[in-house]
Figure 1 (cartoon, rainbow, N blue to C red):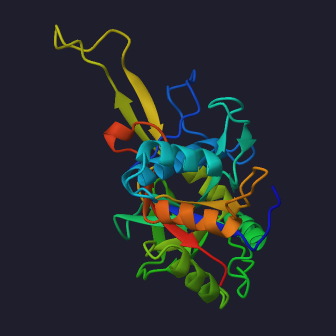
Figure 2: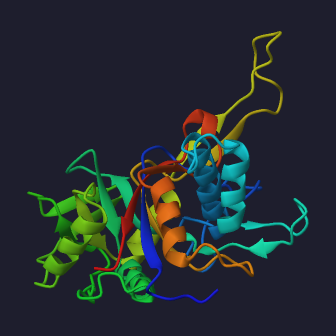
Figure 3: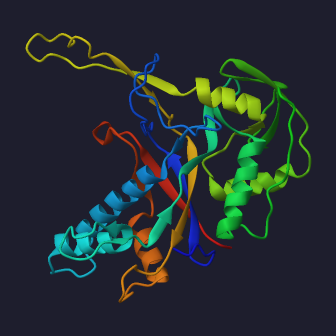
Length: 304
């Protein structure tokens, strides 16, 4: 696949409910941890999980909204899904091929934490902003505006969006001091209002404090199975599951190409339209769908 800025977008995900993108069982206190980047320990959702969620949601949408009403809608939706997201070799008598869409890991953009100035606030950090700037350049998004290069004291913070009337802010177990922001913060404020208008109280904190919070302030919930005959817990059923909390903000880069067959009937612009029509407002990612987990509001950010 040729990654071109012409057929690429940023997809921003706002977590309406807690998200569990699991990394398997662990030997520590948390039995079912979430996926984390190896080098930063920041939560993320691996690209395979994001693409799988896109594929499932896409298929369900075109089952309910067939492009050619009256035909075999199930076969039609399945064929369109395989054409865009790829098919296994010989799975239906045809040769296999890769998909015409490429999706990156869903990376963390802003993280919600408890605070004394509001029920909760969002936090981000300079390293996140540097990464976003590089990623957005790949998609040529917001090309006319550059994210400011900001640095912050370890226990300081800048107010990016929202109003705070105190000089000290409690973030879980941390206390940070509000510093007078440089003029460049207004550029960051405007960009975040476009990316995530829900994020009304955003703080820029140090990389060290951000990493501490995303490691220690995630949600932990117990799970237990009940023996239906006795009405008591099954032996050994108690386990603790880690969750990325509601109101977390993530983003993925999405690239589109022509259909990967000799005929190349579907072009990149049409595939892009099909995908963004199906995944226009919401999507479900991660496990525990029947518990309402992983409901994400979707916002597409295109080249301006």
